[in-house]
Length: 129
Image (cartoon, rainbow, N blue to C red; front, top):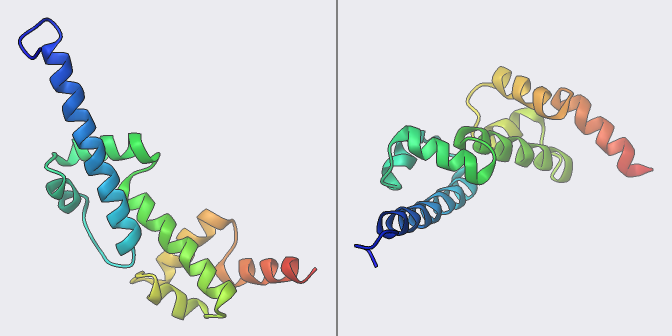
């Protein structure tokens, strides 16, 4: 089978399946560890891929890059903490792993369309109705 006319194509598809498993494992790892800093090169190394190949495969499989995935998880969790657990902005941004309050507020505003305090007050008003 490997020596036949489709051998090379078969091997490439087997490698792609293996790499897909590595990407899904990396995505699961990010979901479990989004609060902690990491680099794409560390994830690529764990997946036995080059950084560019890992980034390309990750984005293709997940729909965004690994750092964007981490950012989205952090911001969504921060929003939940402020809304469900009444954490203030400082508590939330620290708990989800941000190091810079100003960067957190910029990212939050970009994702949710309002600054954290504003957004939470608006959500609380809608929930009370």
